[in-house]
Image (cartoon, rainbow, N blue to C red; front, side):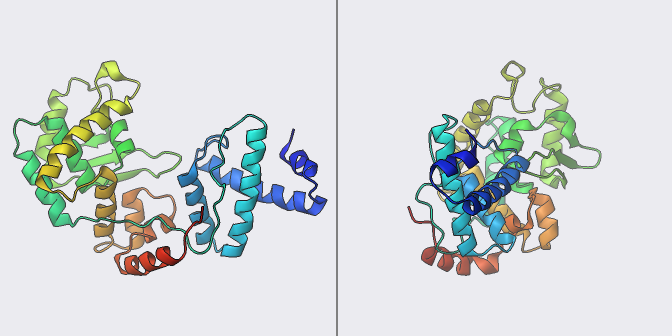
Length: 285
């Protein structure tokens, strides 16, 4: 059964069916461009779509209507046995929806963590390199997992971060403190033809392998700074720091954001306003 026939069975008028299908197609086009399957999108990805619509100038009232269509669409998919949940169930827009960066660390705190961790000689060099990439290049864990030796251009002291359907590629400068350690690791790395931080026997990429190593590293790092929470917190902090020193478009490139609206939410001068806004306007379940 098609979505249109599903709505007809629900006794909706022909004009309503057409309007609902138009909104559904808009949503489907967006998630397909983001590399997300209609049967697999989740609550957080739905919020990203709402942010995208808001950045495009769609009003809150219109967004409320679109969310209603998405709820119907999810129920249709459930009825067809194509998914078992409805991420839009009970989600209503009362105001601007934004995921606010919180618990930010200063760049001074992050660099001190890096220095202290690097002098712990008993620790695995690869973990120190991963930490440096999180702090100085602000890369996401999913990007860290995919890094290979050839992505590092040591003659130019740069690292290439490959783009995905959800992020843009970029070429970033290496910090001076990273270069020597990286060069030695690359020269001795036994996995030169594979992923840099995953053993050859673990390929295709084992996300669990890298995440387990990061979890152990963060356990030690919290002994140096109890405010440290996660790699996502580091990335949020780094992007916020960049915005103090570079313009919006530069930071959008450095962060690999597809949409400038994703970068805008990190603006320090907006954080207090956003916090207040989020306290008064939020999704209601």
